[in-house]
Image 1: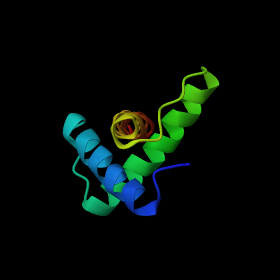
Image 2: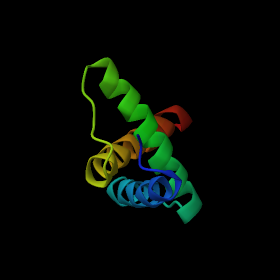
Image 3: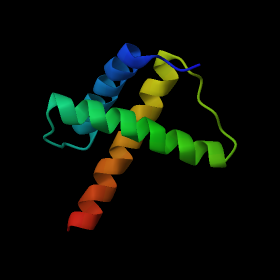
Length: 81
């Protein structure tokens, strides 16, 4: 059981905002939400391949989402340059 739609949007938005602050990216609120949610999905998939599972609660998913969104921003910058 996951966080639910509303909680995922809130956590995704916060995670994307944290990642944009860490990576000094100029993203808007919609892109922050997308980055946070997609980042959490990507990093959860990578971690599950390593046998690591983040709990389906706010704080672990916020951390995973922020790290995943930072990873997505980093990859985008490497591909774009």
